[in-house]
Image 1 (cartoon, rainbow, N blue to C red):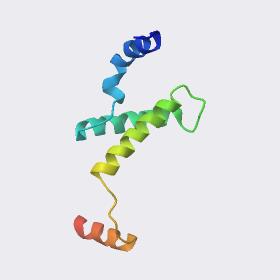
Image 2: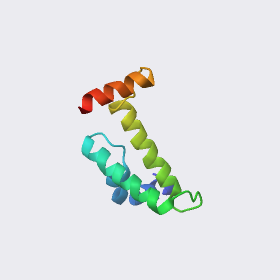
Image 3: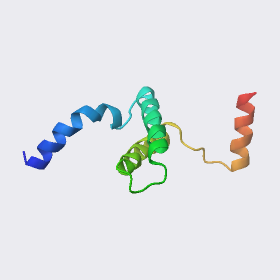
Amino acid sequence: MNSNLQAMMTSWQPIAPLVSVPYTETQYQERIALLNELIDEVGENEDHPLATLLDVVGMAVANYEQIHYPIPAAPPQDVLAGASVKTK
């Protein structure tokens, strides 16, 4: 194993449970909480040391949402009408 991989393996183990791809609703909720904290910390500062982590966690959350919470293929007014019926 090369030294870069060895260094990544050592560094990855402590943070993997926090930032790995979510597969369950619980993991998804944990990533949402982390994403919100990162947004509060990083804001729009692209030079912040955690800015790329914000991007990675955001992509993982977006991917989970695409799979588990797809946007219906319907005109917006139909989607909104359906949402208002479900909340009554």
